[in-house]
Image (cartoon, rainbow, N blue to C red; front, side, top):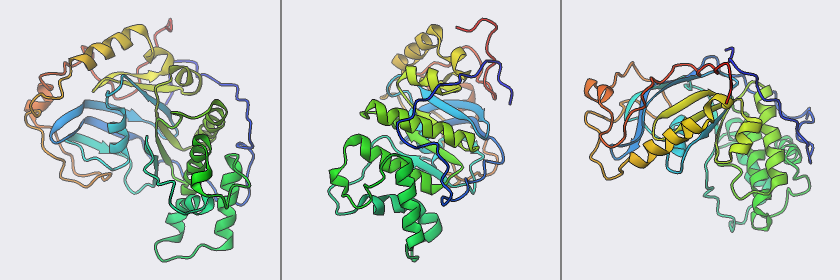
Length: 321
């Protein structure tokens, strides 16, 4: 896809050997064979929509930032892409039979559990070892190399309770490396993480994109977004703008996002006509049209934007904001 803007080419200063090739690690997973398609997608909880009528296409190999006010639906969309949340309406396609590496916003990892850093990272090899398989020396070597790539060489036998917040996040990224998935979903991965770790992990995201992976990251730091992400989706319970980052992150779009976000009422009645999707999470089902009443009338407490939602990123205007 040719985007109508000049992509930002960040100058990266690496403080660990993230970009160095590692011969023992497996070849990168194949990229997605087709775009991720969201067609009039509505997501929510207990029949209360949290994201409305989202229609867009994400090309394979995209490096996409999800931004918006707190509670705008970023984590909800990430969960749906990860197959953890069934749509209330509409259709999500393009992720079938593909491995997905997902790092939630707040890890539920019990750091007091007596497990070594290497053993935790080794869980990323689950797709290769399976439930009944045994970890060989070669598998342990892969874990050690992944740790070396994120700057944690020599931490293999340390306990999780000995790691700082930044070190733990590096270890979780090492696990993502071993998952070797064509799609990587990250929810606020740099929250409460030191700047050096953030810079190193951002460099890893660029490496993944260069390998052809699709990387989708929910973020709140707009400086990071402008510097590192060519594409941005601005959410406020629905799509405000999608396309080249410079054309999305404008004062006008942010003002619209805050207006729509403030108008939403969590206590509003369930959206009429919305039914739980009949197909399993993360799987494409048959064409599932949204009931006419829902597709024509948005949630009564969340107004629709004046412009239609594009199926492709919007072209950047001649004079970029």
